[in-house]
Structures are given as C-alpha cells and as structure tokens.
Amino acid sequence: MKTLWKCALVVLLMWCGGCVDVAQSPLLGNLLQSASKATVLDESTVAAGLKEALRVGSERAVSVTSAYDGFLGNDLIRIDMPESLQTVSTTMRNIGMGSYVDQFEVAMNRAAEKASAEAKGVFWQAITSMTLSDAMGILQGDNTAATDYFRAKTSASLAEKFKPIVQEKMAEVGVYTYYSSLVNTYNALQLTSKPQFDLEQYVTDKAQEGVFTMLAAEEVKLREDPATRTTELLKKVFAAQD
Image (cartoon, rainbow, N blue to C red):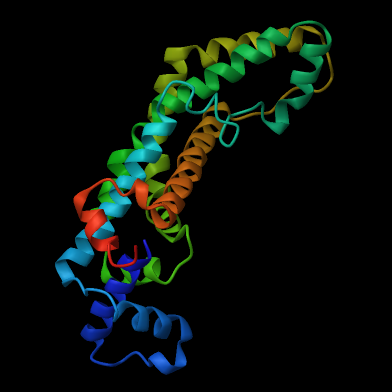
C-alpha cells in the first residue's frame, strides 16, 4: 500500500505547485524521497489504484462477515449476550435452561451474517464519491486509515440501511421467537430484575461493528502483504515498492 500513498502524494504535491513545505514535514519528505526512486504513476492510475484497494478490501470484508458462521464462528466479532441480559443468561444456565440462551445467541449472529451483505453497496458509494481531501487523509493516515474513512462516511447510511434488513433477517432466523421464549421463561420465575433491552438496535450495532472490524483487518493485509494484491492494477501501483 505504501507505493500508492507515495505516488498519490507526488501527484498532490505537483498540483499544489510547491505549497507543501516538505522540509517541515519529515513524513512527507521521506515519502517523496522514496517515491522519487520509483516510477511515478499518472494521476488517473493513482486515483484508480486507491479506489481499487478500497473496493477489494471492502468486498473481502463483507464476504467474510456475510458467510455462514461469519459472525458466529469468529471470536473477533461474535455477538454474545448483551450486558443488560447477563443476569438472564446466568439465571437460565443455572437452572438448566442454557439452551434458550444458546439459541438466542446463534439467531442474533445469523441475522448479522445475512444483513452484512448489504454493506457492499454502501461502501461502494463512499468510494466513488471520494475527494482529493479524502485521499490525502487516507494517504497520511495509519494502517486503518481507509477503514476510518469508511466509518466516518458510511456509519449513518449503513445503520439506516442495516436496521430494516436486520429486522427482516431476525424474523427470518427466529431471533424474536427465541428472545420471547428466553424472556418469558425468565419472567415466569418471578424475579424482581426485569431486562430492559433494545434488541433490534443491539444486533444492528453489532453487525455494523463487525463489518468495520473485518474491514480494518483486510486493509492491514493489503498494505503489508503483496500476496493479497490480486488485481493487475493493485500489482502495478505497488510494484515499485516491492
């Protein structure tokens, strides 16, 4: 990923007509010095390469999360019983009714897996609308700068799109049924502590969080591992550094 950042920086510095004082910026100075040793790609190739990297990373992340067991089988993003229901969970397991808890947790993860497929279109809109300012922010950022860009640009639209899909998928996989069984059984015990919990918001937030977590992981791979650059354009823009 480093070559892409360097090439983009060269282009942006030329556009600025010397407006960036490289001597006052060790980071930019080092990047420019290193980039001068490589083949400087034209503006359109640099822009296309950056968008290609973002597209590939986001597609891979969504492919992981939307697969069967994409959430349930991944300890990084698995959706567990929320804190507000921990008393319910503990009580049910203590009286030999842990299966209610297990069924509910599995159903939440299945709903998130199905809903996360919707993230691809939202991410692509963010990629196509990326500005030079956005590109500079990513270029100067850390190993998850692109993920941070997506988070800032897509969180609101992703949440808006996710929620109705999550609701649909929760009904499809039986989340509401399992949740009702869990809570009704717990309430029948006539305990004083009754759970207060927004089920739909919880699953929506966790689904979105899981997608961003895996996107960050894919971004790091693209930046650090040449083997993950599977398209000709990615190979071209990164070739000088490798």
